[in-house]
Image (tube, rainbow, N blue to C red; front, side, top):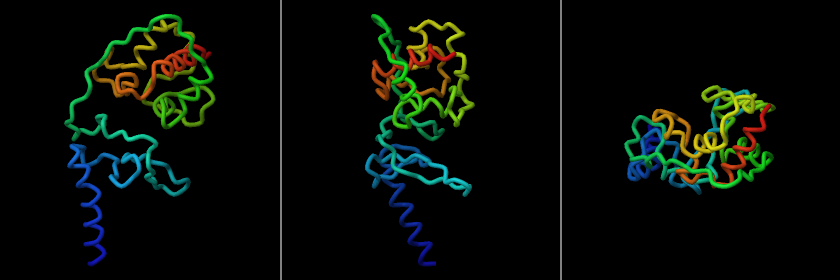
Length: 176
């Protein structure tokens, strides 16, 4: 009985700071973690998830939780000015990094073992012949084209810099 009381007290201590910030109860947050935000990691052959501190504090941004009532930044139209000047190698790195684009979570990318199935299959992207400006806008803030998208507004939320988005565009446009 005493251990149940201790666990309940610990749960309240961890959740109260989340409610105080206006975050939903199901947000992956631990106020004691260095950046507050937690991310799941699959524990191989165990059927369990392990929650680890995320590299960034993501609490300022709205979550996908239905309980999250915080206002989201309004969709922003981006303008791709000048030459693209991106680097496909850096773009690929951004696409697979958990602290950057992490595109592989939702999209299938050639050569990656963890293919996402939520977003567009990016294999053969080059053959679709999308304009660079359209791809840039989609990454910067997809809500401009689709208000119901679950794709994060990487530019609007300052998750990726203008150059990082340019690198991603060059990488995507190179996918055979």
